[in-house]
Image 1 (cartoon, protein in one colour):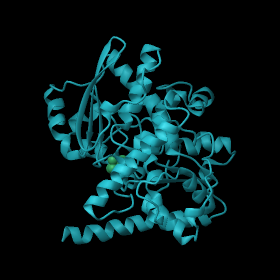
Image 2 (cartoon, rainbow, N blue to C red):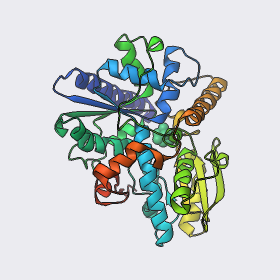
Image 3 (cartoon, rainbow, N blue to C red):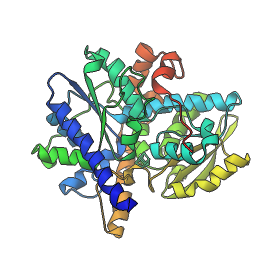
Length: 382
Ligand code: SF4
């Protein structure tokens, strides 16, 4: 009975977000800003008959412009920003005897799992908002200032591979811009539907760039879309911030991979940093029991709920045949790494517009303004 009620209710909730986005786009008094998560660009083309895992960031940006968005920004920018904040938080916890191991906080389903199943371990979660919510807070502050528009007139939409991001944007604490930071979330499939409804010929769109500054990104930002990506991006930056030397190789194969648990020890200056990467919530319980018992042997843990990370999220194009599903996940992950390989900058701290954001607005990672706009708190839900 529960299942028969749950599905239609969930579908109605999703349709609600799409309807509101259409309404917002038609409202001439609003200034429309959109962000797209890393995993959307390696999957949306599947909805238009292109090969599984086709990489189409430029066509996606072009489609969003034709739908009527005034600024086409990118969650990859705030993925880079997350690394600046989360990396600094990890260094602070390690050097100042803070709560360890620290858990990543960019997957809302994982955060809610901790709040529900292990509320006593909430202090282990990084206080960083997810990249989606960091972008939302910046759109209605820094972004509004750049375009000289009233923050109240900014219509903030995000395109996510994830249905849980809809829940996240409705969390009452995520209003640090003075408004609801992200107004509506649509999934990859829902964006494809909007494009089809508008009669846009996706396949033949030209490649266009994202808008600057909140659409500039490095390879480290884009690998957030796969399991192990947040860890790899954090290690690329953490290594250089701590040792003040260039990391010998940005490609960190030991954290890459599919479902399950991967552990590694990384030499960062004098520190042997022990990390764990988990994909699929079923795999995390034994590690959580170790943390609870005080026997966990690592400093930092990345957890993604979906089996291969966000490329396999619930809002992505559906592939029903099990064999093809595996190919889709593999191709999307491969395209993500190819995109990283081909970008001119591959470390978050090298992102020139992130550097400019700190110079002009935030001052420094973990500073007063960063704390206000980019960090959050959690709620025990048991
Ligand atoms: Fe959403 Fe899945 Fe990505 Fe978590 S791993 S943010 S649930 S798509």
